[in-house]
Image (cartoon, rainbow, N blue to C red; front, side, top):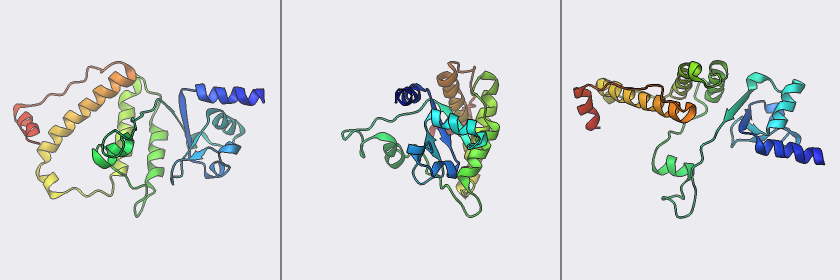
Length: 201
C-alpha cells in the first residue's frame, strides 16, 4: 500500500502529460493502467508510472506515446463571459479556435497528425525550434485538407501573405519567449502598402 501511495505521489509531482493511442492498452481502463480516454477520440491520457510500465513491458510502443510538458488552462466560472469562460468560451463565443473534424472522406486526420508530430518533432530547444514549427504547421495543414479556398481569398492573396507573415512572426516570437525564454530575434518587415492593407482588415 505504501508503494502504491508513493507511485501516486510520483504521478502527481510529474511535470509531464502522457498520451497514448494504443486501443488495446486503453481498453484496460484507468484502474488497470490503460489510462482515460479523451472524449470520443482514440487517444488516452495515462499516468506517468503506468505509461513507463507499459513501455518497459513492451505492451506500449514508443511511436504510440507522446509526452508533453506544460498545459494551458482557461479560467472557468459562472460569472465569466457568456458561457462561463473556459475553452468553450474561446471556441463558441470568441471564435479563437477552429473545430477540426477528426475524420474526412479519405483520411483519419488524428492518425495523420499523430504520425507527423511523433516522427518530426523533437525536444524543444533553440536548435530544434524551426523544425518543430514546420512539423506543427504540417500537422495543421493536414487538419485543413478538406477546407476549400474561397475565390475571395485567392483574389486577396497579397493581403493574405502580408497577414500570414505578421502572424507567423508573432507566433514564433511568442513561442520563443514563452517556451524558451528568448524571442529569437524575431521580426517582420511590413511595407507601407501592406501596412495599409492590414489596417483595413
